[in-house]
Length: 75
Image (cartoon, rainbow, N blue to C red; front, side, top):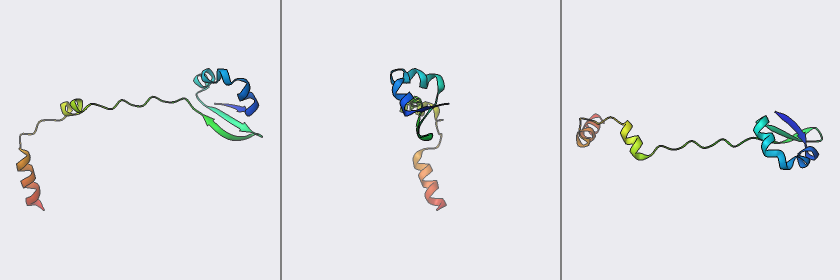
């Protein structure tokens, strides 16, 4: 983490991307009071496909009609 005042941030604006990459967090201050925090963006997790989710599920030996019937009887 590195603290920068607004004037320093303006001077290094062209190198801000490399600085964030190196430091992982920047705190921008005005009159020695923090006003902003700059963090690198983390990539979003890739969502699994429907096909992949279906492949993870185990096949049931009981039919869906039987499962519905059992559920109704339990209520």
